[in-house]
Image 1 (cartoon, rainbow, N blue to C red):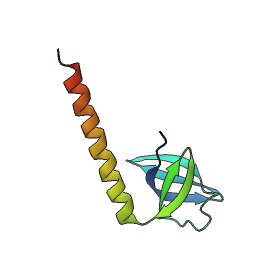
Image 2: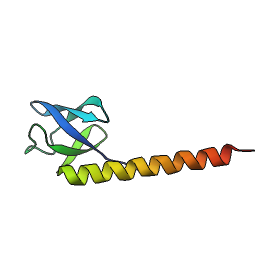
Image 3: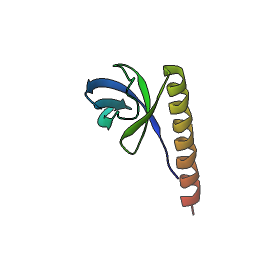
Length: 82
């Protein structure tokens, strides 16, 4: 399964950018979204921004990912009980 995660562009440097994910910044390639601007939200997969997205959509996606993570942790704890 492949997963793309929203992040916010914090710094641009040519075709790469520093993108913030949950407080952590990573360098991401922007070749596929040449229209990106500082402060934009992008969807990132395998080190590449694959599309721009609006902030509301990004926050909704992050909330859904957090919900899934919580449910998976809950399931793991339930399965670990003797």
